[in-house]
Amino acid sequence: MLTGHQTWVFNNKPVIISTGTVGGPFEANGNIPNDFDLLHDDMWLKQDSFEKAQQTLMEEACQTAVKKSSIEKEQVQFFISGDLINQITPTSFAAKTIGIPYFGLFNACATSMESLALSAMIINAKGANYILSGTSSHNAAAEKQFRYPTEYGGQKPPTAQWTVTGAGCALVAQDGQGPKITSATIGKIIDMGITDPFNMGGAMAPAAVHTIETHFKERNIDPSYYDLIITGDLGHIGREISLDLLKKRGLSIQENQYVDCGLTIYREGQPVLAGASGPACSAVVTYGHFLNRMKKGDLHRILVVATGALHSPLSIQQNDPIPCIAHAVSIESGSDV
Amino acid sequence: MADKKKKNAPPDAQEYQAFQQQREVQRPIVKNCIKAFFVGGFICFIGQIISTFYIYFFHFTEQTVGNPTVATLIFITMLFTGFGFYDRIGQFAGAGSAVPVTGFGNAVISAAIEHRTEGFILGVGTNMFKLAGPVIVYGVFSAFVVALIKTILIQWGGL
Amino acid sequence: MMIFFWAFVVGGAICVIGQLLLDVLKLNPGQTLTILVVSGAILDGFGLYEPLIDFAGAGATVPITSFGNSLVHGAMAEAETHGLVGVVTGMFEVTSAGISAAIIFGVIGALIFKPKG
Image: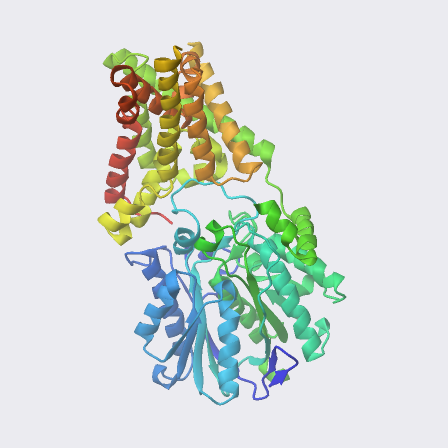
């Protein structure tokens, strides 16, 4: 229930009973290919546009999550999801295929944890028995929307990030086997006046810091409570800046306790510059990699802080700064709670 | 404009921007310039070979050979763009592959290929010049101003 | 045969100017290319671009600056015979190759290729 000003503590402990993660060829070649349920070797997924390929990614992630659980699709009450592309087109078309009541969200790369927090809240309040919560992104579709045509030979600076092609989906339930969602802190927009869309890590770091700091203050716990604090897609630059800022604010977070999904998904040597980004980044790495590690027992409590840069092609052209947001959700392994 | 905005920003934002700038990975300017020099120089060198070829075998003159050279280079660019190499060259070479006319060709062709999924009229047709458009617009307008001034000076100024 | 050498050096140098505009002034590619085209037009206004072409050949005709130069050239050639009206009508007389080639190969490219992503 509401604790402090912007934190929910979920007394009924909603459970993630299954997850579905899908990736593209670049992810298959990355650092954690074994944590994906499904990998594609074609950017187009046999569709005739990148946007439709992204829709397919989302559909497959949802279908996989349902298939891995013991329930039927018809038992799911809501689908809560969003993405980056033109008025969340791929998600809405995926929702048409999935055919269950649907909430469409937009929080850029923070959509993953926004949808998980809302799902947990609805489940906690017994507003539903099962909710599919997820998000997707597609590298080429995002490039086309936010930057240049994919075949255009523009040079990206070393601060740029690589959008993940993939989709991650969690099936949240009242009870069952699996990791439990214990709390969520909803962030507010932080704008430090950064205008460079090729430096999203630097723009989003203050939002992550603000949400993390608020989470610990309002839950009245210490960073050592968590095995890992996982940020969404800050990349090299954003991770280091935010860690320094957190230390400056007096939070004692260990270097190896603070990891970033954008630095986990790809190998050294892949041309991703400052790291990965995109809504699917935090979704696939959390629902795939980190929940798998939790099931194996090497993680017990994690705090996932998905960060989002809420700019649009229009706001960048009009020289506006990048408004940023971060949402934190804590997930704890079933046996501990 | 940007400076004015910076001055109006709250103090914590100004402080953060300074801090952020310090921590930002700087662009390797010298290395980028060297790469741009060699790739850009190489493209012009190829252009010179093509020009020489046209002069010797098709009897173009030094003055007229520019047109077929440019057209040939843009044809080669289409192949490089279509097979997905030009964006990789661009990431390596920066302005080295953007400033030669091949970069203009790549801007047009990549936009045309990218938007084919929206159809050939509204997709390819309307979006083809979305990157290269400004070059034509301001090239033409500045050429108009320059030629206008020069013509006036010649006709009435007795230049 | 020195022209091959100078084509390389001059062409490379113009690209370095472009790279400095991109990296030091942090302009985007569109702004950079626009500045270079306008510079080409202005240089030709002072009669400086033609000597560069004689000296460096493709080193001066291949970079996008030559686009501005040939636009001015077309306009001036027509202006000599038709006066001020010629400035408007003669504009594309010399440069048509670059634009028409880009349009033709753009459409052909869109017909035969899919973006690789």
